[in-house]
Length: 324
Picture (tube, rainbow, N blue to C red):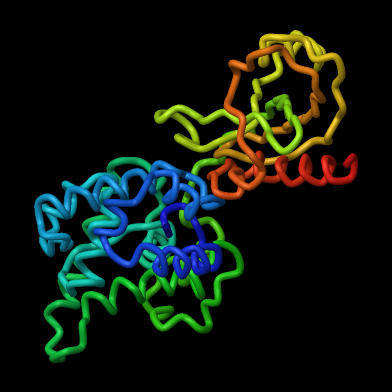
């Protein structure tokens, strides 16, 4: 959950997840739709798919237990070098290195690394430094101190709370006397990250079909963005500037007799800044709708929706209540 997501956002999700999915057995045997619903709002839904794949592997091959060897952890679906290092060092107190954004910032400033940390050669150097530090921690002769776990967590916390991207709290840093960036007045320029790619703006249209107590939804494919989640029928508006009526015919396969604007929803996916214009399409409809499946409002509450379409569902529901 902490991959690409801040701690304060994760905490309520984690608490709810652990109440319903307390172990690998529960995750392995859960319906994917239930897992997606618990994950709803966190984004990057490939993570929850990999979590279930890993749970099933562990139930089949390791009696539902996480292995304690780095190479075995790395073989599990969705677990890369950083996550494997975090598991082995924090859970098992092994001298396995970690390298996330916070640790990269601490190490580049501490050692005065001027190169772009995203470049392979610099990445390799940072991994070597992280490994040297945690191996040195393992040599500390303090029984039951869990020094590897403490060292890696301290690096992450140092970056999260003290060695901040802007306005680092150098006066409160326990290693400020060793920091090359502080000595050379380079803290504001390190890490030397490349400029972010410009945001790409997109316009989409979504169409709400509602008949009595049912609405029309479709499920996203298992591959791609937001796999397996549900949404209202929608499509990206072409640059040629099709009208809402033309887009409705393209998406739904028929031309609604009426379109009522429901407003616009702004949301972001990675570098994309998306404006979703939504329209209510009141009945009547053709005999058979092929663009989605009819679901009741009570069923909707149990389905995992993408963040933007969850907002749209609330707007549509309010409109339906007001209109009777």
